Image (cartoon, rainbow, N blue to C red; front, side, top):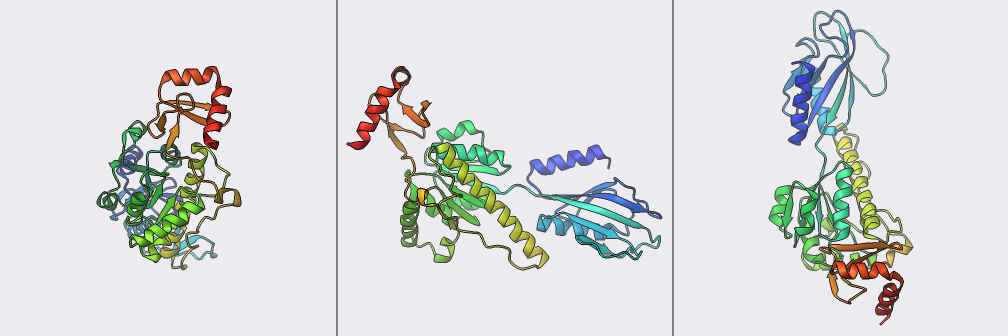
Length: 347
C-alpha cells in the first residue's frame, strides 16, 4: 500500500469517526527490511495496512498501536536486542527476528472527537454550537423548536429532549443552554444520558434550584455529581456570545480531563484528576442570564430571541426587534429607545 492509499484510508476513517494509529519508522539499523519513513496504519480491530518491516515485529507494533488507540497517547517504540540505556517514554521490546536488526517507531493515534450535545436554541446555544465545532468537537443539538439550528449545518439535530434519542447518540458531554425554555425537562434528559459530564448555563442561584428539581425527579446523588454549573470558568460574561465562550471553555477543559483519565486507566497509573466542579466568581454568582423572551424597545412587543431575525448590537448590548421597521427606527434614534427600555425595566 503506497502513501497515497494510506492517506485515502486515513481520510475515510476520519470521516467515519473511527479510531486508528499511524506508525512511522524513525530509525532502522540493518539488517532489517524497514526503512526510515516507512509507515503503516493500524485500525481498532488490529488490521495493519502499509509496511513497517518484516512479520517478526508486526505483532509487537499492532499491540502497541492498539494500546495507543485505547489511551489516546502517542508512543515511542524500540524493537532491538542490542543493549541500550533506558530512556524515558521509550517502550522497549526484544527483536524476535533472527536477523537481529533494530527498528524504532513513532505511533500516533487519531481518535474521533468527543460528541457534544447542546440543548436549546437560544443565542447562547447557537453560539456555543459554532464555537464548539471550531474547537474540533463533534456537535449535535436538540431543542423544542429546531428551526434556529437549521442554519448551523450540524450533522445531527434532535427535536425535543428525548431520552432514547440521546442514549442512541451517546454524547460524551452535554451542554444545557435552554436558559428558561424547558430547563427542567432538558436537564433531566441530559442527566439520564450516558454523558460523562453535563454542563449547565445558569447562575449559581438558578443552578442550585435546578439541582433540587433533579433530586425531586429521581436523579441519584452520584449522577448529580456529573453536573457542572456554572458551565465554565468565570470570564465576567454578559452577552450570549461571551456566555457561550465561557461554556465552550468548560467543554474543552472537561474534554482534556476525560482524556487524562482514559490515559491513566490504560497505563494503570490510577485515576487522574477527578472532573472538577467549576465554581463561579462573586460577580457571576448573582447574575441571571438573558431571558428567552425579550421586549422590543421600539413597539413594546415581546420577542422570542431564539428565532428573532432583526438584531442590532449597540453599546455592548444586543437588541431584538419584531420587524425591519422597528430596527430602522431604533437605529435612527437609539438613545431615545434605550431610555424607554431602561424605564420599562424599572417599572
